[in-house]
Image 1 (cartoon, rainbow, N blue to C red):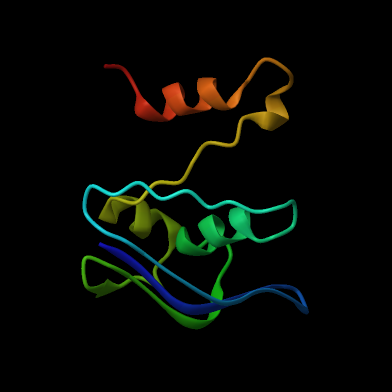
Image 2: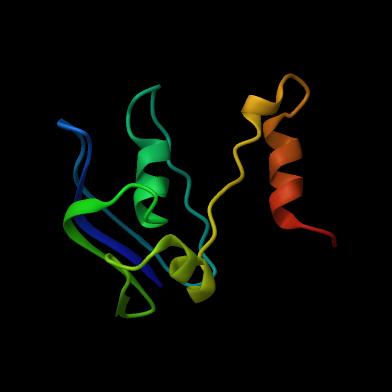
Length: 104
């Protein structure tokens, strides 16, 4: 189970995540919805330790992963979405989902 508890994150001096909490149980799928700039991508980057949480805690199956390096988080079994939008037109959300799912 993934648990994010009262997490704050910053870009420089900008306080971009304020008290974010969520829980994803085994077998669950969760969608983060919001307008541009609401913190969806930053939430994922903070879970993956690409952006560091300055407050709060992130746990995976009961283990605190808040301070782990990104590669250790991947080794633990957490992987984020591949953002292909920078590759140009034609890389739709459906294409990205198929890419993330891998070969069937």
